[in-house]
Image (cartoon, rainbow, N blue to C red; front, side, top):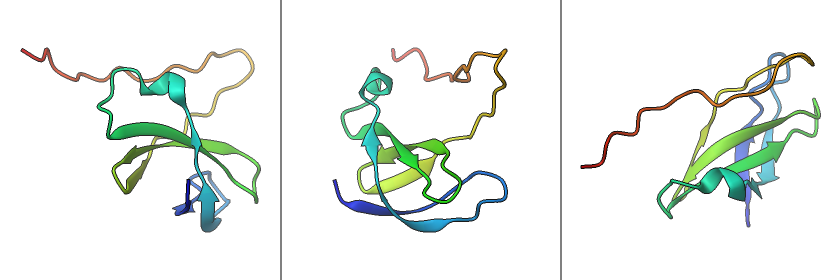
Length: 83
């Protein structure tokens, strides 16, 4: 995979540069084959974030901060009944 120009979405970081995306194969279930969820690791703040790749376009997904007592959960999204 080629390096993609990204901006770190974490508060106070503001890092911008090219990174390789790490595929998130578990999160690709239910998406069209042209859409994939990938992960990036910031070299400045050492935090990661996810993005949706649709063809050659990238869309950063919302960053969720959790404390040790909370479990992360993806927000519910209505993708329609499909028929």
